[in-house]
Image (cartoon, rainbow, N blue to C red; front, side, top):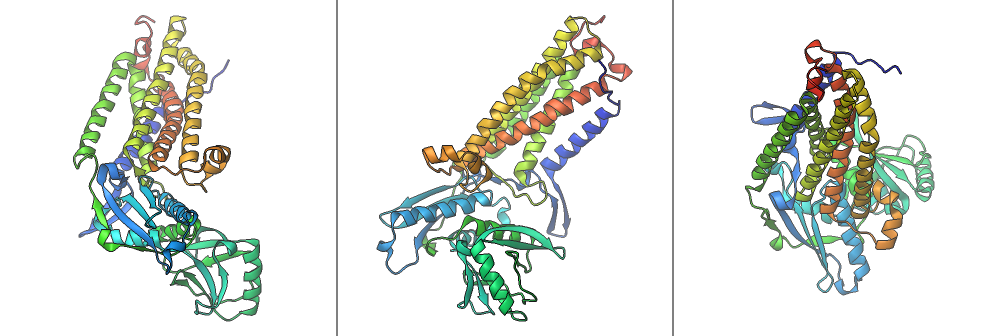
Length: 458
């Protein structure tokens, strides 16, 4: 049976790519012009840490209505759900939210932003409490409403128009009909788009818009456009909320200020010891496995920090860190299975090339079975304990119907980091390590069976 040949250069190409990913994922790419920081690629320092690690803010919301007693428990729960969705849509998954029904209060605790020097607790709290009612009005008078709320607006997303970020709204069938009729009558006039009492855009109508798509343009950055789209998608509060500023307070980290540094040092030592043990046990394959593990860890950190374009930093909590550790353990197991299978092939008398090909082939089913099981568990956790309008929740809607919706940031963070870690394990531990080992085995200096677990005279 013929196997596809692997170039000697493959190892060096993959090695350089993994090292580049590791460096940029951990340290990012930034530049300074005087005291101004220009960030090009986010690194580990840009991760948003959970309340348990960095501390955060506590705010108490109250309905801004004349008759507070008329607000039902169902409406208080609806407001709680909207706030939860707003937090999760901004990748703030480590939060606590409670409803005090007797006093008609919603107590929210959420973590600091990754960039604490620019973090304004009052502004963040105001965003959470905004009613977020989107309205389309005639001219610039927000009392002459054409479209309003979720009855007319189905969803929001970000896109680019003339190289500028904008928010694109998809209208419902009812909203589409209203908007088509209004724009046909108002050619040459303006239609203003409002978020609560803030006018976001006031474009001039040039032609009737019949496709059910509306654009909010303005001086948006990519981040502010995403934030506005997420706020609209989270829904409108059933009533306006106000914050008791006197009770707005800072929460200290539950694990102490030095906990993060201790965890990083302990994790680095543990990672180094694991790599050392694999190298001592599996020799050259142990070296390759260590490089693959570094790539897996770097890829996971990249997905958490907001490394990739248009991706926000994900809140990393202690359960989230546990998910990373568990996924690294799965990665070690993946490489151990492959290394042991290669040793078995040497015992059958196969050559270096034959042992490597057969070893990876025979280990693949066990590796895939274990990883797929963990992926399914991660998806279920994210579906059951994440935002109710998320992709995972829609996939596992039956479970949600049986047990009820539940948004728990800590469990959601655990499922997310575990899922990402396992995906990168399949990329690095299965594909990258296989091609690196096959490639490096082509070099004459490494053509010794003893380096792969075979006999020295093999």
